[in-house]
Length: 209
Image 1 (cartoon, rainbow, N blue to C red):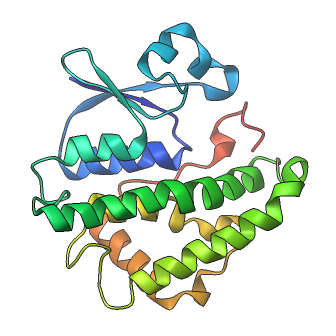
Image 2: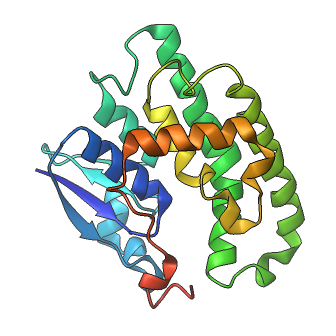
């Protein structure tokens, strides 16, 4: 049985819950209380030296960290990770894009905005907002002529980019300014279904949200 070390308000962990659910893969959940320091314990750091969720512990005792690496591992051999080398590389392109341009920018701004940390990080906010607008602009261009990021069906690239991308309005971006992105969000949402809620930080009394 797989074990997912999870923190419900994390959209990085959300990605993994979605893919496991879409594939009908059973797993156990271990909630990690990150604001109480549980992800910095010696036991957890053996699972992920970076001390972050999600982590997926697999049957042979090994553990995989980094949300997009987990997606690639779980999706192997399924339609969510293309088998063709070039198409697979295109999916990986968007996975890397998400971790460089989306999660550190929109993810950070969203976290700060929803947990009362925006003011203390004010020196970085303008730069993050500019970078976030560039990321959404790049995504808009990438979706001009394709229903999903890699061709005609949902892949882990869409799940990854959608996770924080569709929450951009939580931190002040207007998705109405990006019509191709907005249409893609509707397609991804419709394909994934309603069984994967976005959990507010307020469910964790230690978050400050």
